[in-house]
Length: 240
Image 1 (cartoon, rainbow, N blue to C red):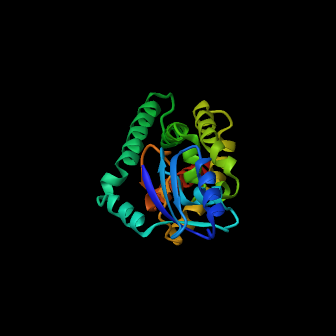
Image 2 (image 1 turned 90 degrees about the vertical axis):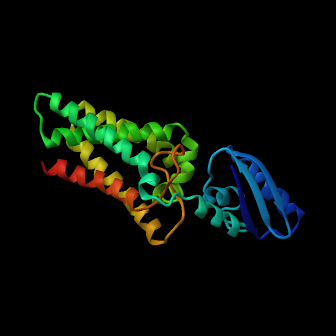
Image 3 (image 1 turned 180 degrees about the vertical axis):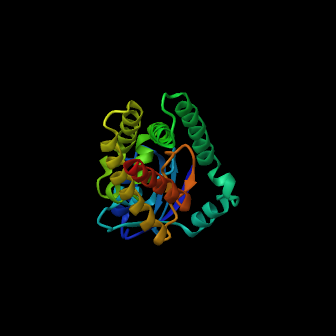
């Protein structure tokens, strides 16, 4: 995929060469063409890279500032599906599959109850979503760091997060010390929700990283509902 960006702060050929060199160090970047006057870059990349990750690569102190060009922003806007269902179809299908499989597992268990179903659902949720994130760990971490409060400050947290989800899913399905698992989920997802709410309030045009880089979902109210659902379920399970 090819994206165009504006770059401010370059004053000489040395600046131009440094910016190009720094961008080429990003694993997902295939090629870079940087011009000085006006400050402009054309980047060919294997996966979508958030602007925050590009900024971190070329100049964390904002000596150089990289922005999506007006043409690129309008192009991305035209590419966004207009139909809400088509946009979130992958996410809705995954939720549907997890719901049905969890229901079958709960019915087959010795003590069927709504709590049993919720526990299976939460376990399936974390394992499934961790799978999609692990398909492109660095791509997920780049996207997650653009809106999560902790991943934005500590990049390694974004790399660890899919493994945390996987372990949580296995923990829930094991049935061992579930109260501790619910408290951990409550804290983890509540904190994640804060980052989503902040980005929505600031009206940031970024991608949701919930399904990694496989599906291009916009960060929106569905993302907020997804995190809030896990918070609500954790609270309900603690109450029950």
